Image 1 (cartoon, rainbow, N blue to C red):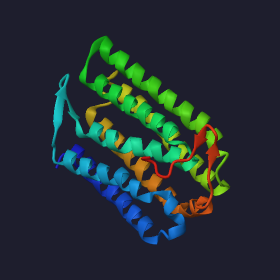
Image 2: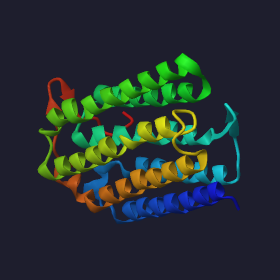
Image 3: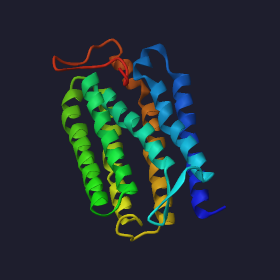
Image 4: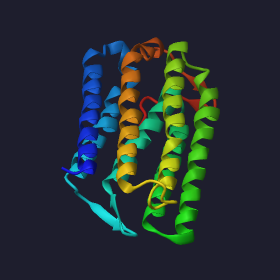
Length: 241
């Protein structure tokens, strides 16, 4: 077993811990807390566990500029990060339109990140710059618009929103830094080191996230009978509405 394979195997186990947390969350959820729409959270560690298991088996690895890149890592992010940011918006009490906007910006960020991997030269640099700009736009929504919207929900739910927002918003800062330092960037770290670092950050980004929701699951019960939002930003019934 290579070090990269071992890292991906450990990542798989870590994500399965997250799956177990969501199963437990669903098992202990009573009727008053169902407004939390916890079923969507299975996508976060579940899809990641599948992708990491396949990466450990060296499935869908591509070669870019002589560097072996696991394509499924980007499939993982395209599946899981929209749920991560969309659920933050839902927890804040955002409208369907605002939640969709957050998800679209996130998908654009990942999409341009993929373009930065598959291209080269100035196109790669430009795609990386646009992806980074999308991330800054995402931060603006998470810390700006959603903070205003979250003022309309219960204190318990607002605290959960702030916890999830900070976990996503601040932790994700390391991804563009790691990529830029990697072999497709300035080449300060090897692909092996990059793979280990990304796997570690991925597990930290996803598993504690679902555990935070488990810890604060009763925050939704406090708002179960309420109607949130203002005339310009009413809350959706689920993250996918």
